[in-house]
Image (tube, rainbow, N blue to C red; front, side, top):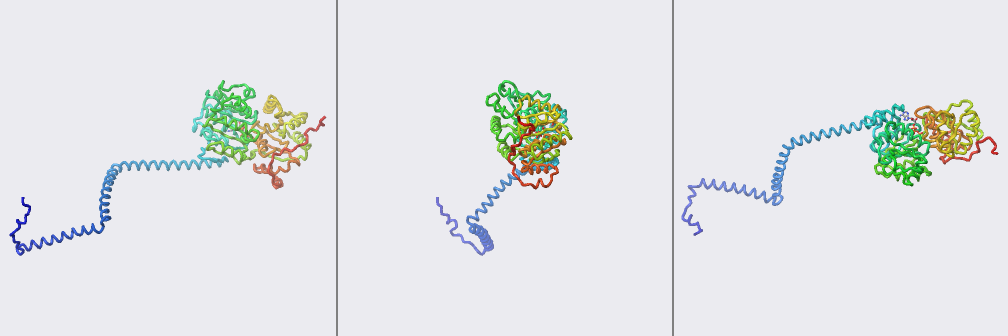
Length: 529
Ligand SMILES: Nc1ncnc2c1ncn2[C@@H]1O[C@H](COP(=O)(O)OP(=O)(O)OP(=O)(O)O)[C@@H](O)[C@H]1O
């Protein structure tokens, strides 16, 4: 088949005149089109790649944006409601969180004011709010009514500052180390949350341990625990000499164990006591327990309490820096609580210094003081067990009902001396520092430091046997020439707790306190033979 079509047009003559108008129209259109096409080409030429890409890009963008927009629109229209709801929910949540934050801040402010009012100082992360009253034990922590009833029966109407702060900390499973004045109710501050945490008796092995530095204090803490746990059937045990030697604690139930470090370590070593389930450990008079003499025993006990979720607490009226350091090493996320100022004598004690010149002068002064006005009960501290016995031998013939307690006496003699003093059978108790800490002799009117104390801490604890639980007390400190070097330290403590001190005392030369236990002349006025 022929493909040439020129023959179709051969012989045709185009009359240009006749079709002039059409030719002109055609030519114009042609030229218009050529401009349009060329302008497009020009445009393409101008941006060969980049020119394309914006178009493409635009297109893509458009496409993307369309899709995205469409999606957005779709999403928007769906999410307009949803996002609207979400943003409403988000707004609500945000408002809630702002509200909560504001309330938290207000609570923090209220706590700070409350702490300031009660002279409580805390450091640590997220410290629980202090207790306003004992009713909060119930409302905030669901305390057993039996316990709150016991508190009321014991005559405790309001928590003391250390109780206000330490109880919520321990109930919130936080470890703590605390320093609060003598006689300010630290015992209840750790016994009450302990019993609340234990809830009821169980046969899970020993669940709580309280370590005290002397047998006398252990026995006293044991009695306090029993009083507060009345009606609860907790198995509270005091580690006696016999128990530490013979008893196998795995053979009988024990919720709470109270012990001195030595007895407890002995029982652990004999494998008669397993402390691996202890949930709650208290080191009372902690600075004494961390002194070199007891340190190894305490370390042993702390290691034996291997339960990882254990809550440990340290309490004392004196908190030296080395104990704080130890506490920080030992504890996790602990709270530090200080009531009043650290290492300060109780403000309810009227303190006095009396110069007696010599040892003879002291004996005269005490006799004179008793002859003028003996206002029992009176506690007299001397620096050693030998001197306690000597002074007792002197005063026993003076028509004064006097007792003596020191570590050379048998357990029974020690107990009798303390019980007789508590019962008012003896008016004056002569003591070595064995009862200087922690002992709660009700209503001691006066403490006499017959021998100058050998450290600031000893002074604070000794005089703190009077002026307890807000009562007024009195403290008299005898001093001789030998003690003058350390007089200023006591004068400063006196001034810090609000006592009047002659200015010459505070102007004495500053001396860093070393253990001050000078060799003193014998108290005895009788010739030795
Ligand atoms: N909330 C309270 N209201 C009234 N009295 C209280 C309260 N809490 C404790 N007491 C009483 O205060 C006295 C001193 O308490 P506690 O022996 O616990 O003092 P402390 O701070 O441990 O003193 P120390 O540092 O000498 O050991 C006790 O007789 C105790 O019964």
